[in-house]
Length: 342
Length: 286
Image (cartoon, rainbow over all chains, first blue to last red; front, side):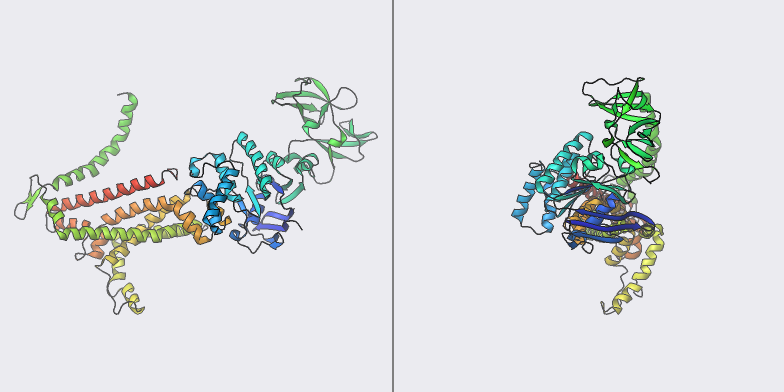
């Protein structure tokens, strides 16, 4: 039995269903991300774990204990809110100490643990400040320290990095991962940022319209998307409709890969290659954009526009207006059979 | 002076004229009047004297009335805080459509004419009124005791009309509060009472203190309510000034009382405001 188990969870607000038939098991020490567009039910799921929202149906168990009858203040979970929700009238140290005071921890131990927690997030000397006097990144760290200092059974992160600028967000991702590994706390992250989910998680739960689309490791989910939604939501993808021929699946009459039945081929932009020999899909480069470490090309093909990403590794890249032939390896593509619902 | 400055002066002129006409001039005239002499035979004597102030400051009759005014205003402020702050919190937690309708109920007292409202209280507080009878029936008093012409009666009637100011002020302060702070406290193990006392109340404090200023100054300068409920027997500073003007016809003395009341209120409000700014500027964005 997993450490945190969500079984057949459903949450409906009147006729509107926010979460439906959700089954999820989180192992102890695991870092799991709930990823999806806004309104997909990921935040509702987090709030049901936290206890702020009651499931309409289903069971949530932590370490074999049913959580559903436990009030949020009795669950012992650490939560980092999107807005950080620091107490503005308390100093940083008092913010971090609050959860320990509620647990009636002795004064000396509180001081020691608050110091440790602040040191862990790199704010050892900032305990006397008020939240308002700190930057967004620092406030974020305080919120993390406040949630972790109570040694929570689970750490819940609700879009914790979405209010930070891009550079700081990347730094905090690394740091968050490091702190989580170090403390070994089972963590559930809610995010709409695919890059964040890919970078941080042991496993990703991709959600859409209240349902789980796919659960898997970041690599699996990216490389072998289980549905068309996952393929388009996580990273970018090209889709081609393919017809079977005697030599394999063909796109617009050009054989691309083996296969016997009509299907939709889905291929990542970085997996598409330019070829000079053999069969492939002819096309013409419409635009070529330099993006530092890679080039982004839009190639017009008989079956629509194809996105191609080429690393900036010194090899020549075709210019705008040039005709090219596109090819890819069969194992890099994923197929969904035509006629089946994506 | 350039064109833009000209335009600026032009734009503030109407408001300035209005202010000078209906606030500054009467105030200045009252101040001048308070330094005039008076005799029962001659009326106002246009001399320059501090005799009126000397009389007020030396006579225990006046001291008692000023102290009573202060006492009433402080009680009203305290009770408004005790009622208004939780009321605002409860209102904030209400759902629509309840919230809108209850806000209307809360500001209801302000929609009723001061005379109708106060006479209504006179009916409730009088010897045969509902409140004394209820207290008697409950065995809290041996016979129905009228609350008319008592400080308690004045305080009750003033709290009724001034609570909305406190509620709205605290409300504004709570609206700036991040609701997630309550959830954060809850997730850290705080009970509802602890959340209210340690998380909500401190964040509502600027609203409570500024609401306190409004309620205090309105209570200290209130006229109609103490005039009807307190009557002649229970004078406060504003009704005292009124009596000096219209009954004794000693305008200079009345003016001096009014000036002292104004100066007293302004001093307290300014001091209070300083305190709030010093205490909270670090913690909350203004």
